[in-house]
Image 1 (cartoon, rainbow, N blue to C red):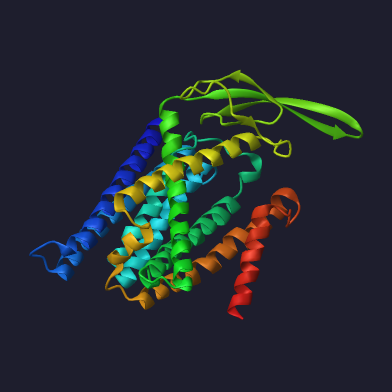
Image 2 (cartoon, one colour):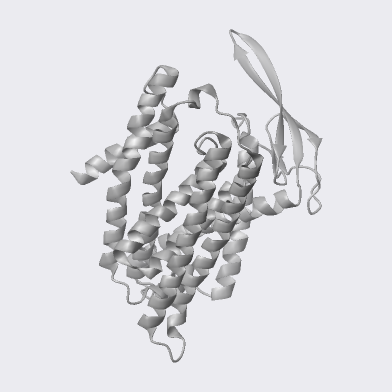
Length: 376
């Protein structure tokens, strides 16, 4: 089985690079239409078809990865973060392929394919070993719940891409009026959020490739029946610790640019498991995101929204609006079934209750309720 799993991992890598190549080809299809002695429409159609063929080939390799990992692991590969994010990225490409075949909008590939690339890169951050299923996951509801939830989310990703393109197409980036300036700022906020995710992935890859690790022991004190109980646990950092866990001591610290200890400790109310490490990750994401955003701004010498706006010349905003609407119309009922209704049924079977007030459950309910209000 190990040979099959190794083959599966290779298929994942091949799919990733094919998607990267497809993204470049989509960029050539759109940006190269202004090259001299070129018919813009013919150029876009030719290179758009080549790019779509590349993304479709990547999807074929990723499907091979999915089914060979299923065969090698003995269960559907959606049971941990690596497998789920890999499956989600695959379904984003399935959703993109469906929408592209309907609308034939080459520009959609320039925004949708990078979403898949980012999700795949994020998936690679997590441990990739096949793990045996815990008893509560040994159910056919795993296939139904997780796959439907991810499928719904994939159409939401396409809706996001189309919606963001709509904003870039319709916002007046040359206006100085208060309303238009506000819209320009919010577009820039979305760009910055995307850059934060990308910079986080790059930062984690860089430090993991360098083998960075620091370790702390954290003591957590709880009161049970009037008596204090303390539990000591180890916390491992894969990024240089700017923030140490609350009430912790250093076991090992790998120096970074002159830092031989954390700058400060996490606040007392952040005493949960890995809370300090998560705060440290957020800080690193902000630092790396600001650096990457600053570099991009220096390169283009203007807000990113204004720099991207010319790429959408000639695109009908109504088409983008329809793509976003259709994607949500497809994704929402699938997501509601998989992530809310079927999840409740599975929770009742596995744990004896339909509802546990988990934050994910609450937000899914709020999403459904909000949609009902909007539709009525």
